[in-house]
Length: 207
Image 1 (cartoon, helix red, strand yellow):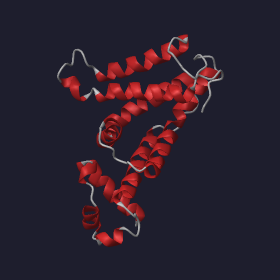
Image 2 (image 1 turned 60 degrees about the horizontal axis):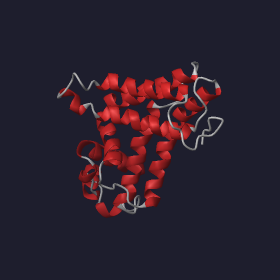
Image 3 (image 1 turned 60 degrees about the vertical axis):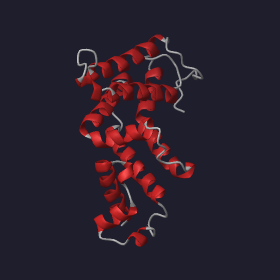
């Protein structure tokens, strides 16, 4: 029943955003009483937290480990998988944008936000591992893999967010090319050691 509630809530959020979510709507979708819903989730925020974790775990499916290629090839593959997620699951990608870009605070309670943050870092683990391995292999200069993963995510996310505006100025904004430019520029900087990497460790730390 818990999973049915999360699935129903996720569909409501995907279709109408977080503002569309209510215990009453979920109960109606499941033919369940609103009061009984609180047996499974003590508050709406607790349910929102579960929905957010589920959406981020969808990202983790796209960002699963890649084997049998060099670390830099793994890194590029994982980056393009993030781009594929934005195209193949636009509504879920849009919700992640809302979580990060909107001034609205979706999860104000730190205890409820913690599982979502943990899920995001788990989803990024393959990226951090690829960055760390690339430094170990000598393909990148040593640096803090966690910081680099966040920089990479921020840059690629920014490129993807411009997709909506590309139809207005297609000659200037080509999202796929911009995405590739961001990726390769960061890799080139880390290869040359020219991108500031404050707090970098000397061994490409995975932390």
